[in-house]
Amino acid sequence: MSETTDPIVFRPRPAGKLGSSETAEPSRRTTFDRYELTAILDLYGRKVASGAWRDYAIDLLRDKAVFSVYRKSSEYPLYRIEKDLRLARKQGAYSVIAAGGLIMKRGQDLKRVLSVLEDRPGVVGV
Image (cartoon, rainbow, N blue to C red; front, side):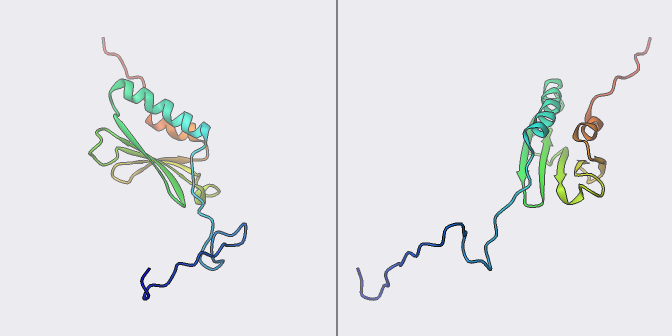
């Protein structure tokens, strides 16, 4: 060991602390629970089977969770399904946002919000 280098001193931190109390706080992320993911992936599976969607991405951020749907993997997202807990008491935690930023539907019930993306039966001409 060289004379100019100082040794690294390891100091154990107190149990239950992540670091210094001023700078560290627990990293909490907003996530989709099992039932929410089941509802989203059921819709996604039907759309993939019909050929409309091909890829997805899940982003778990501090203030919201985002499920992005892609037509192709190299494009911008076709739709974003967002869960934002800050809006839960105001406008509803769930929203479906189109590619241009238009909020298609927002509400408290995820299945009702996802209904905007369901295929509606059309009129059959004779």
